[in-house]
Length: 92
Image (cartoon, rainbow, N blue to C red):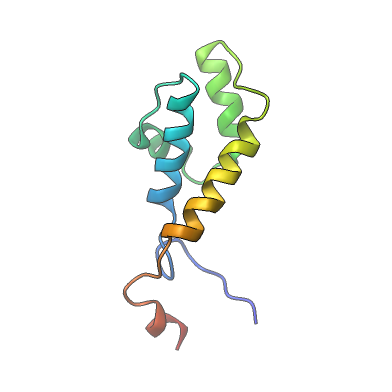
């Protein structure tokens, strides 16, 4: 079975994902709040987001930044991501 989830129907990963990305940007010296990440990068590929941030800041992210973000995202999703209140109904 394949289930296609429109964000927010089964799980709402976007708020958690933007918080994770923001935290990782801040950790390496780029002041991007979750609100900024959500406003400018929701729905965009991480590679495009990272390239746009480098261009806007005029400096490079660490070479391992994409892998670090992916690892942090998977770790936090496993620990914190939960089904929405009506996920069971949506699947019935």
